[in-house]
Image (cartoon, rainbow, N blue to C red; front, side, top):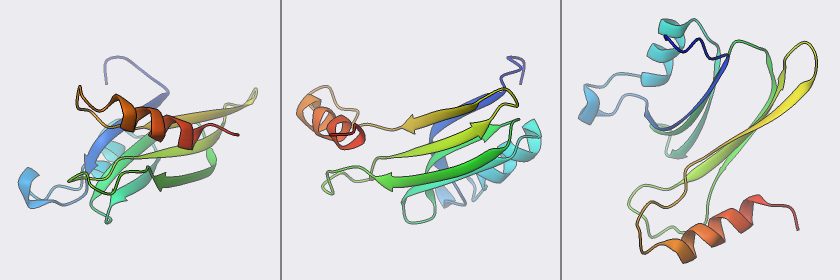
Length: 115
């Protein structure tokens, strides 16, 4: 709140999981910050990445990243935001986190980049 950020990207946003008191964090944050959002689920509809923006989100898409063996899938979202001066493309990613997972992160990053 204090940062005054116009665009915020978040990972590990839950939407009603019992482990966090069944709170829909996407909805709660959106209301608290008075910012519209796009949610990109990666594990059912209850877990994923989120983009909040004071500017209009004119287009957005999301997908899971490779490696189905992870307990909770990782993913990304990409959105076009109209700042009023330009269209800004923003990406939010959640890559594999383990120190020994560099091969997986490289595969996940390659999946994001155009050929």
